[in-house]
Length: 143
Image (cartoon, rainbow, N blue to C red):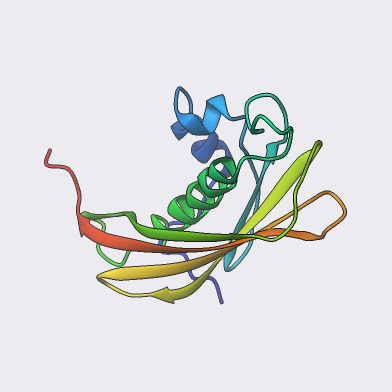
């Protein structure tokens, strides 16, 4: 059974990400399932640190992007928005090129908070980072 109150749409997510950090880092949304959102980010000059490996902050940006987009499609009250409250990341193995893929899945979807797990993998399917994102559900911007 799908968790979505508003089914995520890949085209709408990409449009919403234009002229943002998501766009500048090359993040792409790839797939939406009944309970997950998948995306990817290139490991290139935009996303590596001076040692030539994927920057931990770039991994966190991908994780928060996927979790945040997913969280906002699970809101019970349409007048609310979900915003990042806390994120942590364990960097498991380095990535030096290609793409890193992320999958966001919900651990908790409540009316005041949501908790998401985002698993990042390299092109060989090996875990590179595990992140947990807590989202605060708050009133949306005033019209």
